[in-house]
Amino acid sequence: MSRHITIAPVRKSIEVQADPVRAFEIFTAHIDRWWPKSHGIGNGPVKRSLIEPYVGGRWYAEYEDGSEVSNGHVRIWEPASRLVVTWEINADWKSDTTVASEIEVRFIPTAPGTTRVELEHRNFESLGPQAGEKMRNDVNGGWPGLLDLYAADIANHP
Image (tube, rainbow, N blue to C red):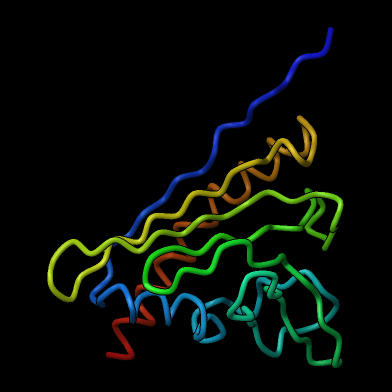
């Protein structure tokens, strides 16, 4: 008899001073401004981070040595509303297309000029039970700081 292990998703949210259109744009088109250059999984320093703006597009980083390393791919692209990307990174923090957890980001207007950004990182089971729990714990501690950087970028680019 086989058992299916379910690993709880990571859920984080933050309110930003931007309408959903701007909040989505900064999260995606301007990810290079707020995603830390130290958060790369390739060899050497990150030159820039990018998300290609269409279903099937890559979420990747370009490195100073000219290489490119994929973090994942766009599954859902709904500007001003929702973004879903895969996280094709294994528990050793290496690009790995054989595993794919998933990140969904929703942009919900809460007041004029204010948006609640809700992030859910899920499907850690794709990494296996132990590696999935390790990745869940790692990103659970990492997403709050990343969302703070995102919110600060919005505040610095009105």
